[in-house]
Image 1: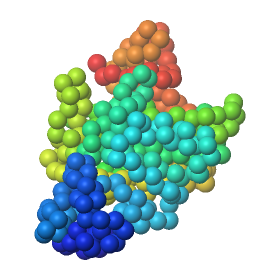
Image 2 (image 1 turned 120 degrees about the horizontal axis):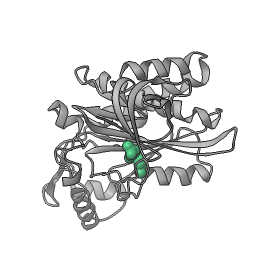
Image 3 (image 1 turned 45 degrees about the vertical axis):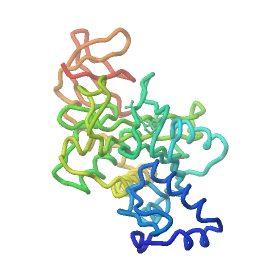
Length: 312
Ligand code: BTN
């Protein structure tokens, strides 16, 4: 990646990759169709106008050295990184494997929702973990992933302070820009493997009609373009710290619950409607020791296990 933006002749590229100049032309056209900004043609040589903000393993691996996150797999277009990661995990892929895509054609959200995954504007990332924890701790891990996103964003721009909505949406100006889908394969007492799927709207400026009222991006909310590579690296490093602490430190569990509540306007004293079991309304009253949301209703204190929370 050093000297990435010098002019290189088609012949030199062809020699280096062991092909002909016409094949190089075809590959350059393919890169352009994927959004890579390459100037020139066979007679003048080629030049990258800017190093593209692609989530390439060669760029990311050095930035996350010392973490568990290796190998990093990168796809230009994929159905869902979570589906690919779950299949890979079932096939024995190691803990710490990361799956990143520039675009998802069947991105999945919680419940039966889809995750809009436009090309190279968001981060679509799935991670395989094999924690020695009971399945009941998966929620804590998922809350910790939300905290890791929060911390990564603050490291890049302290002025941007997202609100965490239980269980793990991140909001700016009341609109969602990040969602987390944690899936697992477990026995009753032991997690076999778990995939944390994180979708972040980073540089989107437009959303489909049906999302316009509820979705935003970091760029739309902050007014500046964000480096997806830097944000992904910061996210993986934060997630590494959260995960290591959860496995090693006796007080990590409480720390996650406390910090989640600190960064969330939803955890306490918020009038909400819960879309679960026919739906109910009440005022939030903190998280229980397992990370479930408590809501005071006219009938008493209720624990939200998996429903969608809406402020009312
Ligand atoms: C939600 O809020 O509903 C969760 C959204 C999770 C989206 C991410 S994008 C990367 C990974 N692959 C998927 O198909 N889904 C998750």
